[in-house]
Image (cartoon, rainbow, N blue to C red; front, top):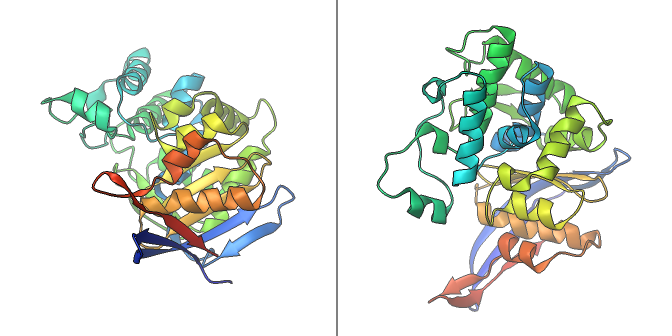
Length: 311
């Protein structure tokens, strides 16, 4: 094991902060191309595992079109178009938003939050509502109880766990995610293996459906000016899913799969590491992606510092 990479945050001439990052890159031939930090220790990948959860729902027979599947695999911003897809999915199956187990929330996106105004938080606006709506649809398809669908021992979640272990690697434990669904502890190498599994999926397979839906509808995976959306929109063939507390799963244009975790959970360190990996591999990066992934450190509204990556 090599030392973690470090994202150094400068403000003027001063180093203000440092973020340690563990990462692993699995090449298309399944070799480990990059490895830094404790990539085989248990980690909570949070929403970076949503593609595996969406895969499990497809395998269970959940009736999802590609837009609904992209939303189920994503963490949406709560913009009106996101809410419309989530509400439409429930309506199409005769389900009610009151059955969602995710907590009420306001939209994530700043513009969407301002547009929300004084309305109280709502379950549909929660960034995981697409996943939860799709989980209800899967339960209905199997005639499983809707109540308690987030319990780790519910048949739905047991199947999610089996799927995750099949396409990624062992589950080391389980706790509760922010949305109320199980948060499975795995390791970064397993997360990267999940990306490779999706990248190599045969056309017509459930895995291919998930990957194709995310690539076709990147805005539904995240939202306006979000890393997942901009990465998949600007680099053909990529697949991207961030997770809370500084996690990223990204399949690169050549099929290599990157998984990373910022030790202190700082989301601002994710983008600079992604750009550093892309630069190492000679991938040209659009300015739109650079602006979202590595915005300047500002002082008084003006650029005053930057993020540097030490490998």
